[in-house]
Image (cartoon, rainbow, N blue to C red; front, top):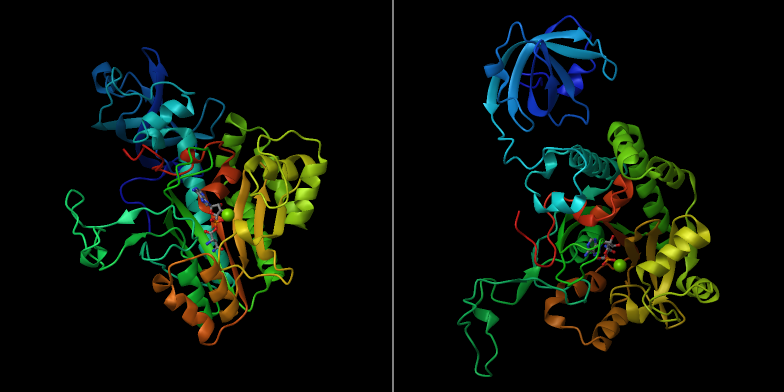
Amino acid sequence: MKTPGRTPVIDLLRTAPGVDVTAKGWVRTKRGNKNVAFVALNDGSCVHNIQLVFDMTHFSEEELKHVTTGACICVQGTLVASQGSGQAVEIAAKKIELYGVADPESYPLQKKGHSMEFLREIGHLRPRTNTFGCVLRIRHAMAYAIHHYFHQNGFFYLHSPIITASDAEGAGALFQVTTLDLNQPPRNEGGEIDYGQDFFGRHASLTVSGQLEGELAAMALGNVYTFGPTFRAENSNTPRHLAEFWMIEPEMAFYEIKDNMDLAEDFIKYLVRYALEHCMDDLRFLNDMFDKELIQRLEQVCATQFVRLSYTEGIDILMKSGQKFEFPVSWGVDLQSEHERYLVETHFKKPVILTDYPKEIKAFYMKQNEDGKTVRAMDVLFPKIGEIIGGSQREERYDVLLARIHELGMEMDSLWWYLDTRRFGTAPHSGFGLGFERLLLFVTGMSNIRDVIPFPRTPKSADF
Ligand code: 4AD
Ligand code: MG
């Protein structure tokens, strides 16, 4: 279907001159003199602007007075070959209509090159900058590519719930969901809050992961994936953590850990390649403005085989590195981003898939190895990011899983349905979670996760 009433800039720039056209969009800049005015118009369809040329013998100053940075206009004119360099075509304007003014005294986006920190303060307007236009278009393209990848590989999209009664990761960083009166919650005889009277008749929260539901579906449909928002109330104010982030979680029946690694590597390379093939204009802008090695890094990741090694081997390398880390390394510690990045950026200079972590630092559902100490976990570690994917082969043996749940003192009454998958027709299976915004950090080269999601939710911040 054609866009009604106008031609998007992305299409105008590919059209041969000589036709009458209508363009609508927001003014980026205006310059000129008494005889001619040049306006750069952007409509978000691509990073490029279309140049509008106003012959001032046909327009009054009054008509163009409010055509200032940020204003929204509709222009009719003829597409002509551009006199200037930088664009093939421009619009010789014949008629202008002003949709919305943007008072230069108060419109905050007057100049180029605002800092990312400043733009976060005006998060409601930052989509109008070139940078966020690029990021949001790439975000869209990646979401589309994710569905495309799974669809063409025979996976089904599963909508896992956002409200849940179980803590999938057992990490306890949950946002509670309640309709109880917080000033006067009902209490039982022991004085504890009586969640039996709450909306769901029990304690409920926002999901930290769709994995457990994904496992149920994989035991029926074979290969599934979820792609939705997940919520973590951990108070980590880092450039890589959000309280609300999107996660892609494939779950596959009959996959062993090696198959899981193969899928993760193929999937992520497909997405990066897709960006290189479909988002080059936006990538080039981000490459030139922020990160001169961005495109090269993306190409490298597509061309290299990821290194695969065990946690134990990784710890060995870190301990022998002679490097001074803020968090000291020994077998059993959870790896920090500095350790992950040392392995990826300094030691191997390639993405790394680390496997077989100590069971104490991983979730209850991971398949236990024969050594009694490690589980069949796999984390994919990326340059500039650290952990981008976390996954594992799942413990499919009912007795072993139950013993682990008891060992960890987990609440059984919210997990009985999960255990039923192991009681009825259990099967070897595996899966992983890719953090969508971590992927976008890598693909866009942005350095703060708050800048790759339209409306970041972080501690003390949920304004817009
Ligand atoms: O390693 P995580 O916690 O694994 C899971 O949630 C599993 N249930 C996944 C699975 O096996 N199906 O999280 C997976 C990924 C991380 O590797 C990271 O990319 C991202 O989710 N992630 C976050 N991204 C942004 N902000 C946060 N607070 C994140 N926590 C995890
Ligand atoms: Mg993890």
